Amino acid sequence: MPMNETQITAIEASIKALMATGNPLVPGLRSMFPDITFVRCSAGDMDATPYCTNDKYQLYLMDRSETCIRLTDRLECADGVIVAEVD
Picture 1 (cartoon, rainbow, N blue to C red):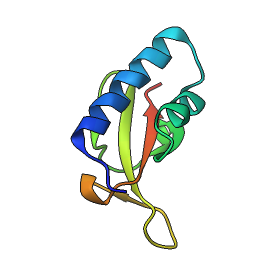
Picture 2 (tube, one colour; picture 1 turned 90 degrees about the vertical axis):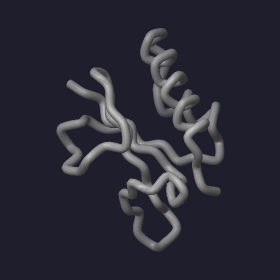
Picture 3 (spheres, helix red, strand yellow; picture 1 turned 120 degrees about the vertical axis):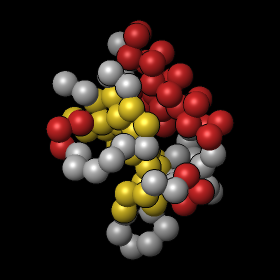
Protein backbone atom coordinates (compact mmCIF):
# COMPACT_ATOMS: atom_id res chain seq x y z
CA MET A 1 0.00 0.00 0.00
CA PRO A 2 1.56 3.33 -1.02
CA MET A 3 2.27 5.88 1.65
CA ASN A 4 1.03 9.47 1.73
CA GLU A 5 2.10 12.79 3.23
CA THR A 6 -0.42 12.48 6.07
CA GLN A 7 1.26 9.25 7.16
CA ILE A 8 4.72 10.82 7.02
CA THR A 9 3.51 13.67 9.21
CA ALA A 10 2.02 11.19 11.69
CA ILE A 11 5.20 9.09 11.64
CA GLU A 12 7.34 12.16 12.35
CA ALA A 13 5.12 13.14 15.28
CA SER A 14 5.28 9.59 16.63
CA ILE A 15 9.08 9.48 16.32
CA LYS A 16 9.37 12.73 18.28
CA ALA A 17 7.03 11.42 20.99
CA LEU A 18 8.82 8.07 21.27
CA MET A 19 12.23 9.75 21.44
CA ALA A 20 11.00 12.18 24.10
CA THR A 21 9.68 9.38 26.31
CA GLY A 22 12.59 7.01 25.73
CA ASN A 23 10.30 4.23 24.47
CA PRO A 24 11.78 1.79 21.93
CA LEU A 25 11.52 3.47 18.54
CA VAL A 26 10.97 0.70 15.99
CA PRO A 27 8.62 -1.47 18.10
CA GLY A 28 6.58 1.62 18.91
CA LEU A 29 6.33 2.65 15.26
CA ARG A 30 5.45 -0.88 14.17
CA SER A 31 2.60 -1.03 16.68
CA MET A 32 1.25 2.36 15.54
CA PHE A 33 1.69 1.73 11.80
CA PRO A 34 1.41 -2.06 11.27
CA ASP A 35 1.25 -1.83 7.46
CA ILE A 36 4.59 0.01 7.19
CA THR A 37 8.03 -1.56 7.55
CA PHE A 38 10.46 0.32 9.82
CA VAL A 39 14.22 0.01 10.11
CA ARG A 40 16.50 2.01 12.38
CA CYS A 41 20.15 2.87 11.79
CA SER A 42 22.69 5.64 12.25
CA ALA A 43 22.63 8.54 9.81
CA GLY A 44 26.32 7.87 9.20
CA ASP A 45 25.37 4.51 7.69
CA MET A 46 23.31 6.12 4.94
CA ASP A 47 24.80 7.42 1.70
CA ALA A 48 21.72 8.88 0.04
CA THR A 49 19.56 11.97 0.21
CA PRO A 50 16.89 11.64 2.92
CA TYR A 51 13.22 12.20 2.17
CA CYS A 52 13.06 14.53 5.18
CA THR A 53 15.38 15.45 8.00
CA ASN A 54 15.72 17.32 11.28
CA ASP A 55 18.40 17.62 13.95
CA LYS A 56 17.63 14.22 15.53
CA TYR A 57 16.87 11.92 12.59
CA GLN A 58 16.60 11.53 8.83
CA LEU A 59 13.83 9.59 7.11
CA TYR A 60 14.45 7.51 4.02
CA LEU A 61 11.68 5.80 2.06
CA MET A 62 11.85 2.12 1.12
CA ASP A 63 10.24 0.40 -1.83
CA ARG A 64 9.79 -3.33 -1.18
CA SER A 65 7.73 -4.06 -4.31
CA GLU A 66 10.44 -6.15 -5.93
CA THR A 67 12.75 -8.89 -4.69
CA CYS A 68 15.32 -6.46 -3.29
CA ILE A 69 14.50 -3.50 -1.08
CA ARG A 70 15.53 -0.18 -2.57
CA LEU A 71 15.46 3.44 -1.51
CA THR A 72 13.02 5.73 -3.25
CA ASP A 73 12.16 9.40 -3.17
CA ARG A 74 8.68 8.70 -4.51
CA LEU A 75 6.14 8.60 -1.71
CA GLU A 76 3.62 6.79 -3.91
CA CYS A 77 6.11 3.88 -4.27
CA ALA A 78 7.13 3.73 -0.60
CA ASP A 79 5.94 1.05 1.80
CA GLY A 80 8.65 1.36 4.43
CA VAL A 81 10.72 3.91 6.32
CA ILE A 82 14.32 3.92 7.49
CA VAL A 83 14.80 6.09 10.57
CA ALA A 84 18.45 7.16 10.58
CA GLU A 85 19.34 8.75 13.90
CA VAL A 86 21.74 11.68 13.80
CA ASP A 87 24.66 11.05 16.17
